[in-house]
Amino acid sequence: GGVISDQMLFVAVLNSNSVGGFNRAAPGAIVNDGKFDVIALKFCNLAELLPMLIKFLMGVHISDPNIYYFQTEKLTIGCEGCSATDLDGEAGPKPPLDIEVVPHALEVIA
Image 1 (cartoon, rainbow, N blue to C red):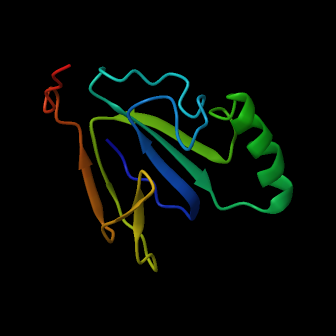
Image 2 (cartoon, rainbow, N blue to C red):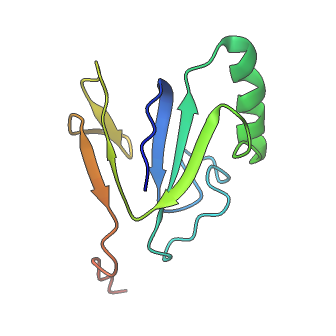
């Protein structure tokens, strides 16, 4: 429902509470709620970054002023000067990225 235009160090679009082995990245994330949890770290100096990283490890970073956090069903991520993205550790497409939740799109048979 809005636009964020800012310099970011990191942007993660999650469908769970974990990223990169950190289990508190998106503390309020629910896998089947039909929404992505988006966490974006603003470009900041080292003096601001270090305390924020400690908050991230503790799972209390969402309220940090250097973090954008929101939930959405759909978003577009654009980037000036970016050449690639990362999708769960693999090379992803070049920006802009259009990302949308598709409810019940994956059938799992166990």
